[in-house]
Length: 350
Image (cartoon, rainbow, N blue to C red):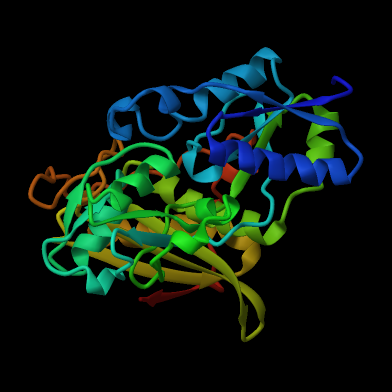
């Protein structure tokens, strides 16, 4: 390991801000860190994420740099990482999570309910489209790509009436004053892992693994483990209309983990919302069990085996198709579901 820790980051303002935040935590602990900017395909292409391969398009170049030894560790937005572990790499830390909710930035400053029938919402996320369409507000949607400035600019210029963004990104960029409304989870469940960062390094670099682990927040790791295990069990990627939010909450017998999930058609014609509560230590099992409930209730018709978002009208006849959860690899505890039963968990419909 080099004396100076080399932190691989995407070059966008948000990515470098997130990376600088992690670097500052390490510097406070006496480590010297320098940022190394890596260009990813997701940064250079304007094509829809679903055509670029969806999940992982922002992470691949960073991971290649890690494996090549160009950088010592990398900071990712966790929602951009595939749920399948990358051989040779480990998620050494998941720091405390920023607010995972979505927000609305509108041309007029209007809230979602004030936009009116026919208002055009700009978003490149099928998850957001599916949930907004399900509200029955008569909204229309325009597929957009770009960084925070580009997306907000579309709303400010009137190209769309509003855009939906992750609140965490605006908070980290100190731009919450531009938010017209924060969308509550009852309206809009976030992407699995949204608001959380993954600090990844080589699995055989034990010294770096050890020093990075000091940044890990156990509650955040438990929450995103449940969310991402659910996503993996559904065999869905970041381009699928799936939302999930887990939180460590006070229960009757102490702390417990509450997981809520959404799967819906992008035309708003059909949606499922289900939830499950159980012990914090059984985060993976909770994710697997809630995914099974969603599949039993029809999610298999809304998320294809390849993770492609479907409308209810174009869904293939999968019958009682139930994908098996991915096998645990042991490479990364974040993506290794536990199939053991969770007898103390309780299921609740939202």
